[in-house]
Amino acid sequence: MRKPVSDTGRAVVVGGGFAGVLAAAALACRVREVVVVERDVYPQGPGPRRGVPQARHVHLLWSGGARALEELVPGVTDDLLAAGARRVPLPRDMVALSPRGWFRRWPASHLLYLCSRDLLDWTIRRRVLADPRIRVREGTEVLGLAGDARRVTGVRLRAPSGEESLLTADLVVDAGGRGSRAPVWLAALGAGRPRERRVDTGLVYASRVYRAPAGTEDFPVVNVQADPRAGTPGRAAVVAPVEGGRWLVTVGGTRGGEPTADPEHFETFAAGARHGVVGALARNAEPLSPVVLCRSTVNRRRYVERLRGRPRGFVVLGDAVAAYNPVYGHGMSVAAQGALALRRAVRAGRAGAPGTARRAQRGIARPVSVAWDLATGQDVFYPGAADRPPSLWERLLARAVDRLLYVSTGSGLVARVVTDVMTLERPPAVLLRPDVVWALLRGPRLPQLSGPPLTAEEWAAAGVSGASAADSAGAGATRAAPPVPAPGGPAGTPGGTGARGAP
Image (cartoon, rainbow, N blue to C red; front, side, top):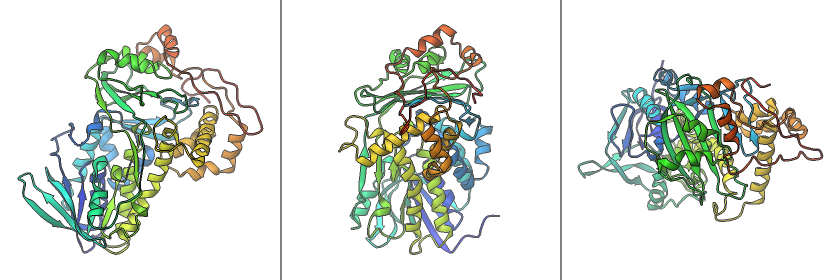
């Protein structure tokens, strides 16, 4: 049974995308009326939306985000699976080349949900917006906030007809995405602008949909990551099996090595990553779409929770507070965990009560901080990415991450704990457990793999012959970086092979 709502009158959510719809679900448990203001008009089914230009590229919902999503919207993950989404056991069904080497396919300990972004958004929307307490104003633009530096009292709107109006609210949540105007709105109220940090690698994404070869229904995710400290533009490539018997293939290149929309060059670009496996797989699949580009990839964080004198009744959520290089796949999971923090805050008191917005913003900042450190701790090393060289803290953090990634290529214990953090299931403090520290000092127990741990059956199902598979190993521009030695002792020995079910 749903908990009785408080006597709070209305909450307004700016933006009806992934984060905005989850914010509405979070608020509906305690607020009598939630109004979602969306500039676009929703498609009738799983379809593209102008306000989500990144939807054509690979999106990952890590298990930490999926747990938060299911808690906010019970039953929605079953809806996704019924609609064709994949629930991928990790790390068993992910073949990944990290900057420090190939991961083994250790026994499953975590999950990843995979589908097109259009299907994901539509499935969540359909369930959440069925709540009678939630209504949507589509095709409507938010012009600014109402109130003053002490208290936000609503939003100023422009309807599709051009008519302007005021919509009052006890609480306003900005989930307007990367295009959020929250800093401008706050400054206009006299509340100041939050401090902002940007790390921009110049990354460009290119994606194409393929028909998956017959027999690849359970094919793993294949992910070749870039190495930020290789001294060359980073190239990444990923194959993600999605609904409808399709593969979504996304490639990316940083400043000076960007992909283009030319379909003749797409598979060649994929083959030019640090390993050519994605190019080999794409060459043997049937393309179903043109190549689409996305350039909205800058890491940007607004420290709204630290803004002194921030007005009551205003919260910023999702990409509006922090947006990340999409290669790390954390945006949706962080937004879901942030919406859960919002729900906890409004359950602790009325939506418009003193302290509610502040509690919510601090709760939202926790998963944001983890994802921010994971993303920028790597991206800051690309030339020209930041306005200053990497700090001592960033260099130390990068060296620690290098060690974690290297040891996890040959240690099931460390691989599991690293996956805990990457999937946002547990905080980074778990890495300080005595058994983990000892494993890091000892180094990997197994030698590094020399190539992707795909089985012979998987290569055959993908239509890639043994010769082509071997050729793909040499197609990349660079090799995995050398191991980082443990303090006071030698590192493990590179080499070896691996496949599903490796110890």
